[in-house]
Amino acid sequence: MQLDAKTLDTLAWLSRLDIPEEETEALSGSIAEMLTFFQQLSALDTEGVEPTAHVVPLQNVLREDEPFAPRLDRDLLLSGTQSEDGLITLPKVIG
Amino acid sequence: MKYSEMNIAALSQLLQNKEVSAMELAKDALQAIAETDGTVGAYLTVAEDEACRQAEIADNMRAEGKAGPLTGIPFAMKDNICTKGVRTTCASKMLENWLPVYDACVTERLKAAGAVMLGKTNMDEFAMGSSSENSALQLTRNPAATDYVPGGSSGGSAAAVAANECAFAIGSDTGGSIRQPASFCGVVGMKPTYGTVSRYGLVAYASSFDQIGPLTKTVADNAKVLEAISCHDRRDSTSLPEFDTNYSSLIGKDLSGMRIGLPKEYFGEGINADVAALVQNAAKQLENAGAKIEECSLPAVSYALPAYYVLCCAEASSNLARFDGIRYGFRAEGAEDLDRLYRMTRTQGFGREVRRRILLGNYVLSAGYYDAYYKKAQQARTLLIRAFADLFKDYDMLLAPVAPTPAYKIGEKSSDPMEMALGDICTVPVNLAGLPAISVPCGTVAQDSANLPVGFQLIGPAFSEAKLYQAAAAYESGI
Image 1 (tube, rainbow over the protein chains, first blue to last red):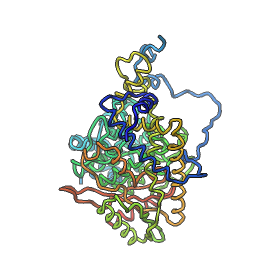
Image 2 (image 1 turned 120 degrees about the vertical axis):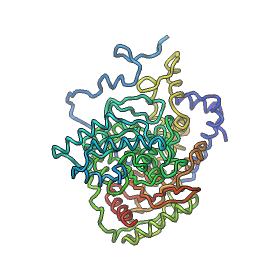
Image 3 (image 1 turned 30 degrees about the vertical axis):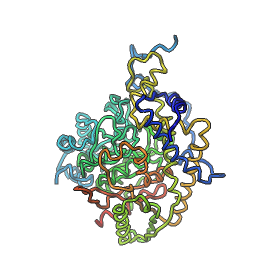
Image 4 (image 1 turned 45 degrees about the vertical axis):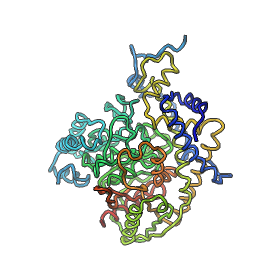
């Protein structure tokens, strides 16, 4: 089984990835193989079963609304990015 | 015995008796790395200056009477855990030169305990893989047989402990990434209850599964490290508020009255006969130590693997969206607009397996497929959690192989991701249910001219770590 080219294109766009030409065949074959494997789940009777997103019951973490010194300083903002004069540089966004 | 071959308890005793200093241990460990790591390749970064700085702090702590069990003990950190000022690469080109500006909670805890970090260990890129061969930066070899993989994704951490290049190491386990390399390399690895070790500063792969844990030479050492790193942390929204962290409390107590189940599904088709025999033999030894062993059944494991891969790819596709070439690390050259910048950066920065999992994740989350794959897998997860809960009404813990086979040769499975994934069959059920499980060495299998280590795992209900350590230590003391 192979994934059709249109589906692979859509997935690539959703993922913000390019699919290099030389990888197309192997990748679509391997994705299709995994999807076939995933289909084993369809045999499972899950009628009325609640889905589990997380094993820990999640609760909002609340705090008093008091001012505090933020840890998100400029070092963090600019770590490992390309910057100039303390600002992150980007290619032209608006034509 | 050389310092580098000693476990935490022995080193701690020497430090306490002032027979050695933390600085001497750090220098000795750095020397061991210099001598051995050229062959093993466990470390991506050796943080020599940082290690000496922390050793000095550790010696000062001891002089001031503030030393604990890990003060001055040299260790290695998996390279997906943030270490301020020491590069944290996730073994990816995307973060090859990324320097975190903060420490992960686990890093903070170990620094506060006076442990001495020697460096950062190799792994599968973004923890996606089971052999460490998906590292974009380096190959790690199994210290027991250097033609073989060390397992993964925490392969560097397991190899560093096994090769005596540190006294302990920290790994992370999303679908078996601590336990399986521990089994392949012959060390002890614990995947704790989900929510008991903070994920703050752990680079996220699949957030509802990822859990940090220790790899050590002995069971007692493992409990000590977990005691140091386990805590509530408000910076991780899934960190549990209150639980007992006295994990060593039952070590040394006898096993009479303990009920251990052997789920027959873990010993069936696809499990190497030598591995199954070693695990069965471990069961006998636990029985001799006083535990009651009984065969049981957990049919729900049959759909654990597809459910796990659906969910972990979905979570990965979302978590890795942040790597856009703007905020972290690598940025592709020559992009003419923002969309091209994203796509070129991600295509060039991520390795093939990472891109494959992102694509799969986006597939199962897309409109039209969401219910059939993602929701279905979440429901399967619920059924598996219930099945484990039912078994734990009758058993204190379950005993099973960690992996269907011992380590395999480098390159043997790397071109077939499906075959690689099937090797995770014994480990992923634990992550789906958020349970603790410990991998303990139980012998070797002779293959070609190599003796390959094998481990068994003990799986318990949430918060049963102390009991797991009790049983594991009883087994260990009998061999």
